Length: 196
Image 1 (cartoon, rainbow, N blue to C red):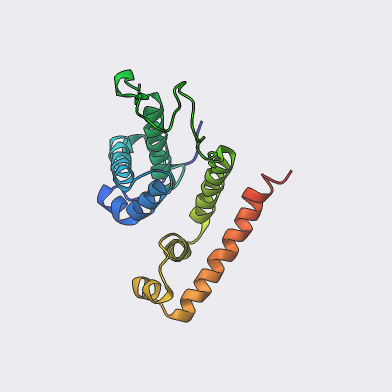
Image 2 (image 1 turned 120 degrees about the horizontal axis):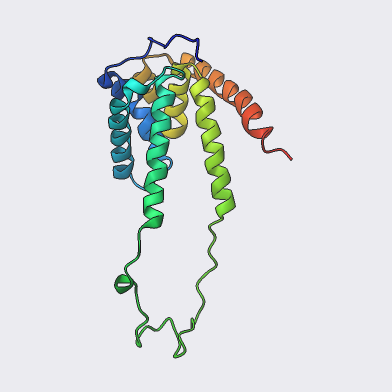
C-alpha cells in the first residue's frame, strides 16, 4: 500500500509540458531516430498519450521522466513496426542479365567492401547515451540546458550567452559545473557498470 501522498507540483496543462519539455524530448527522440519528421511525430504522439493517461499519473517520478518513459515506448514501437513490416517479394530487386556486378553464375565480379557497422559498438553507444540522459536529468535545469546547447546543438559561447541571458564567464562556470557533475555521475552509473 502506498502511503506517499500524490505529488501536486507538476503542471497539469499540456501546453506547459510542450514549453518545458518539448525541446528536450525532441532532442532525445532525434538522437535515437533516423529522421527529424519521425522524431517530431513520436514526440507529438508521446504528448497525446500523456494527455490521455494523465489521470493514471501517480506522481512517483517527475513529469519529465514520465514523458520520456512514454516517448521511449513510442520509439520502441516505431522500431518494432519497422522490423516486423513484411517485405513484398514483388518489390525486391532482381538480378537482371545485364547487371555487370555479377557474373553468369550470379556471383559478385568484385565483392563489395566489408560492412563496417559494428552492432555491439552501436548498442554500447545507445546504452551510454541512455546513462548520459539519466545523468543529465539529475543536473539542475540550467546546467542541463547549457550542456545541451553546447554539446548537442553545438552552439558557440556567444549564442549560448544570448539564449540563456548570461555572461561569458558565467557560461564557462556553468559548463564546468555541468561537466564535473556529469563526469561524477557517469563514473558511478556507467564506468562501474561496464568495468570488468
